Length: 113
Length: 111
Image 1: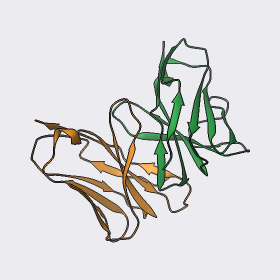
Image 2: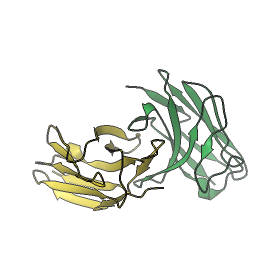
Image 3: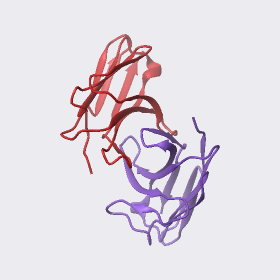
Image 4: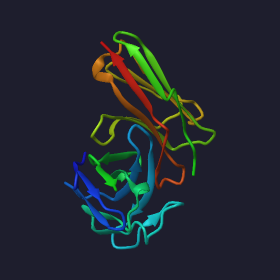
């Protein structure tokens, strides 16, 4: 198994600013993903964080809005850029060696005013 | 993207009752997972089913993968208040590169 931590756990931000969320895994993992979730609802995949190369984004998500870094096999960051109230959500990272076994972080709760 | 339909969306029952949550798709998945999520936390993996027709039991929880690997069910026997949470099914797409999540079932077990 893997233990995943995220920072910050929550934040309140002003529109037009950017926030970088950090995801740290306690062991090396092959795959890392970033998701968005409204409370009580399903998870929407934002992108696959690729180690040493550009992230792979899902339809509706672009690198300019959600730049992602993954410098090694245990760490990734997601930046939410030029935020608007519509970006208010829970942002989750996950990690694992295979898609069918993913461990999730506790999430970052973002409120944009 | 392969789609997963999960039902019911909301379920409120009394302690001791049984319940079943369904996860259906028109697509074949390589595997299917069930997660449980509590408020303020990330989803926690309960089980992975891989083989068509597979049945796995985890204490009072029974998970089944359909023969055609397009659907799955989660059955909870004698539900307890501690079972309250958001239950999510997720399928590994046949491309093997990511998970697709169902819409989730918010379960409330009343004492």
